[in-house]
Image 1 (cartoon, rainbow, N blue to C red):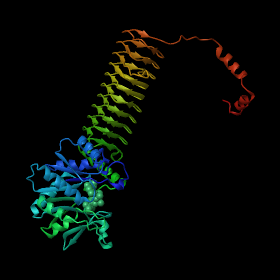
Image 2 (image 1 turned 90 degrees about the horizontal axis):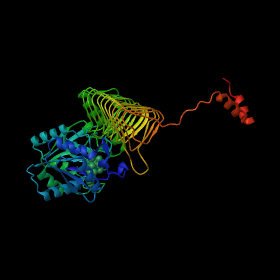
Image 3 (image 1 turned 180 degrees about the horizontal axis):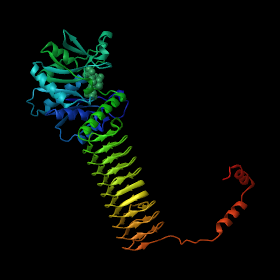
Image 4 (image 1 turned 135 degrees about the vertical axis):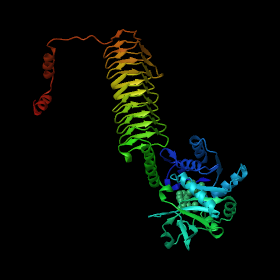
Length: 477
Ligand code: UD1
Ligand code: CA
């Protein structure tokens, strides 16, 4: 059972707390993944606040889990949430030979499956009906406090219900429980809301277990269980998750030049021998193949970077593919649908969208290439613009193999420049260019000899006295 019905008031957000993300995955989905990896057969998420939204999001990001939903109309406590889940799984009567139920909170994304397996292993051997983790921490904050007597756990006191002395206890409840189903059903039935918050506390079942079969406790470090209640907690979890993700990639052969200063989403795949520099963000389903080099400040979302490609500093790449040995940037913007062929080159201040660039083709400086189909070995000069939009529709520019586009040309789409053709610098091309032709469309140049000094004299003659004064005040060259 994963409890995720609360709003998370302390987040001060329109988004339900459990949908806030760490490494691009909702908090609750980390918990579900951990349960799944630990071998849990059936999962029931308890939803309540904004439940349709939470449900839709979970169905989007967790496909392979056998996930069920239970509903808690009013969020009147974690014990009540479990009551709702029990009713729901009983109603479904699916194959539940398993006598143990693992209960997790949806706001604790750092839980690892190894810990969950350990809890299952040890509790089922212990003879107790209930097993739980406890953590000793420097600053116990608002966590529930672990009460012990003669060394044994005898209960949990919620922070708000604690006496001053109890608040000094530094052993806290991270909120992970394994409970025998038969015991859980009866203990949840017996819960009362006789506490400061008037809620049904799940934590009260620990005292009931301690009285009956005993509660089996395992001490573990808090880094595994940190719960998110506000934005500061969220940032702590993000930091911890980032260091885990980076460590995993390092272990797999990836170099991070500034490992604390990158962002890597949970779904990103990076091959060995990739080098990633400071300030890089890798988001979504980005895939980076071996030998690639991603320089400072580059942001990749859902991008595929092929072997040995080089992304220079400060590029933004989304939903695009960069071919083998291709080079991009600095300061390039590859928008959705860009596919760069092998050994191609996109230089600084070039923007592309829905454009394929063939093998060894180049656009080195200051260009807009939108809706283009560019062949191999094409050279696109500085300042070239694909005029792809007429205000209503987008049109395609086709440049066949070995075409040369001179600097500062505008290609007004739809248009095709055929194989090997040449467009002269500064041309506005509106008609297709045949193979091997030169297209030139610019006003013929006229040189008027000696005209420059006549012009200067004329301009001086038209100066006002003020202009003349301001001129003399400036230091002369
Ligand atoms: C809870 C524990 C506390 C523990 C802490 C660990 C209780 C009573 N207290 O407190 O001992 O130290 O977690 O993080 O269990 N939820 C529901 N329905 C509800 C209330 C909550 O589904 O009616 C869900 C929330 O969505 C959340 C989780 O349960 O994911 C925990 O609820 P929260 O209010 O954050 O509990 P804490 O006060 O942190
Ligand atoms: Ca909490």
